[in-house]
Image (cartoon, rainbow, N blue to C red; front, side):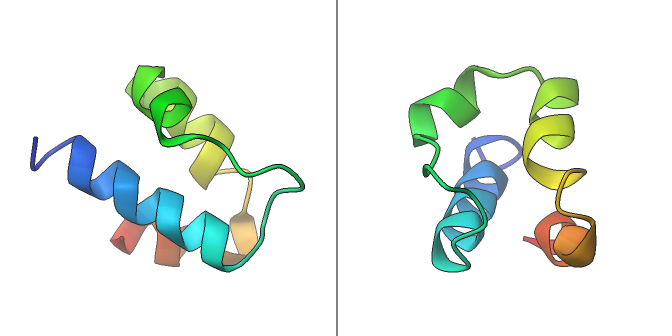
Length: 56
């Protein structure tokens, strides 16, 4: 849980708080993705804050 759920939840909260997406993703959607797809869809796409997202 520490390695998957908590980091994804922190990224989820950061994306929501900064209003980076027109439609907020659901936490369930984020949890269903593979690691590669999660990074591609929610971390790599926001290059201006990618480092902050990776630190979350």
